[in-house]
Image 1 (cartoon, rainbow, N blue to C red):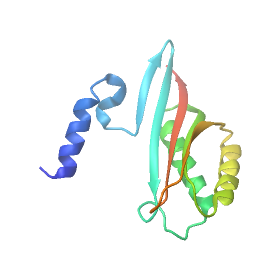
Image 2 (spheres, one colour):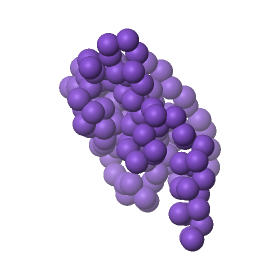
Image 3 (cartoon, rainbow, N blue to C red):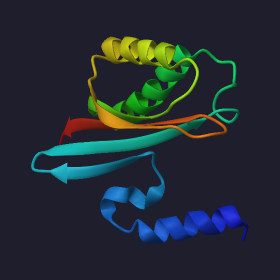
Length: 133
């Protein structure tokens, strides 16, 4: 078994609740009363998910769009997002793109984290959605 497959197997063993869905899905689904809370998280890394020269506003759009898509795929309405942002060049353009995509999807920014670090830039987004049963 490769190291990657062993890691996936170990993570699946840790995520044994029904909400985790065996880690076979991009989203966790928590049933609360007559509704379902859908949570998803994606991370985008420079040179892996986008090119180093890609416009920061495009990165913001992609980051939110992939998460909103995961929530919608579960039949849920996006309630908001949390964004993790690695500080660097073009931050004002990233924020402008984030503002644009959040307005376009009519989804608020609930919070998140910023960090300064060396090396490849990375962003993360957690989307939260609600679906009625």
